[in-house]
Length: 118
Image 1 (cartoon, rainbow, N blue to C red):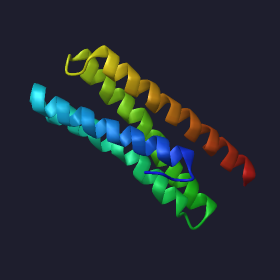
Image 2 (cartoon, one colour):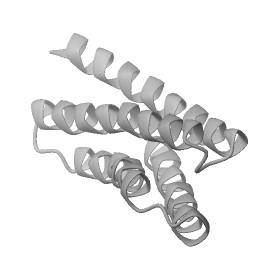
Image 3 (tube, helix red, strand yellow):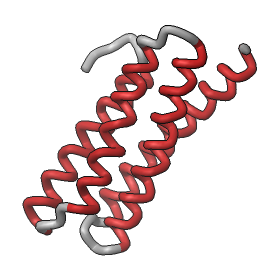
């Protein structure tokens, strides 16, 4: 996805990587529950950022970014759990956790700026 919005691009790339990891976990480890939670939260980040881009008000924008921010925190939890339960390698999990952390920091900064603008 090529877009003018770097956050949307990063979140879309993260979603693709999450989908890829989910497919590998399901195929090789036959794990369906925890990985599905990771998939849902990992793909929800970009979906909510997309919705924020079409927000009809500042409050609507903040609400969608806030949801995306919370999903980025949730996906880090699921990735850590999958790593510690030996479903995902430490390297793969840590790479995605770092990307989710980057997304979290960007969104938190946006939320702080949006609150100040009120």
